[in-house]
Length: 291
Image 1 (cartoon, rainbow, N blue to C red):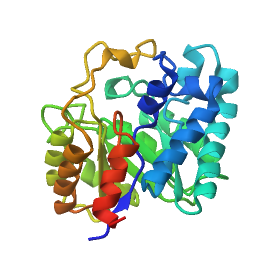
Image 2: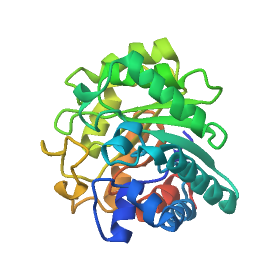
Image 3: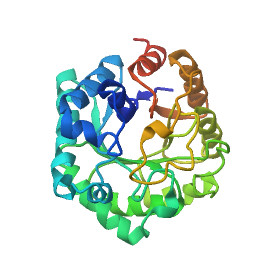
């Protein structure tokens, strides 16, 4: 079963290189050191990634407004898209997906706006990114309504849409909202995205979640994070990722073993999320592509 290799976690790679975690997270590099963003894209492609996700996860209007830079929202969206496209073109192959994060805050689906309101915001992001990207990836959706709003806004723009949901680190059968992860399947059936993935949870939880989603009729995928877990205080736009701890037992070889389990469960789209770097992607590429 052929596997398409996604890239890894942009935000944490940027922090490692910049040496500082701020509440703007990956947006800070777009403002201060866009060359770092390009360099990370380049390294993921060189490692074997076939997909680049734009560094737009944190470039969302509510976060920009909170930090007093709402006037730079479109500028930073477009800059992130251009950097990903330039890296892809320099590499000579691959696809660029426009990354979109939950509105409100990651891992906190209860903070998301109502689906109708969210859809308008996501639709606007799609139109900004449309001239540059090959498709859209809706990341870390932690509840059914949160995912519904994103799908409502992103379907119908003439580009493929991938939906990625995030599950509880301690119980992969449940979304971050507490809803059963299998409750996402009727939504996938209703909207018809091109792929369903599980992302940004511990790899062990991702494996459990995939086992609950094998009945999906769309492509299945997975990309886990390398955090020990998500702490309660990580719940607002002033929080910094230094509140979260990285695992010490999830090097490239260990991560690959999890990825093998995902493939066995039907995943054909495999990459990495936070704390998963180019070395991890290289290990995936060597195994699944024989490079």
